[in-house]
Image (cartoon, rainbow, N blue to C red):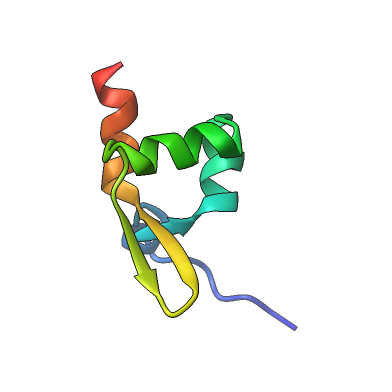
Length: 66
């Protein structure tokens, strides 16, 4: 099975949102702190059905402010 090569634009695309477990993994912030940041409005989320998604730009802003 061969994979097609990514176009340059595809390689640099950022996700629109990430799941909480992914945010924990990529930031190194513990799950409970992520929930605190969601609760106080520091991190924006969207609920779709039962799933909660963190808006990726919101997560990036967290580190840009630090």
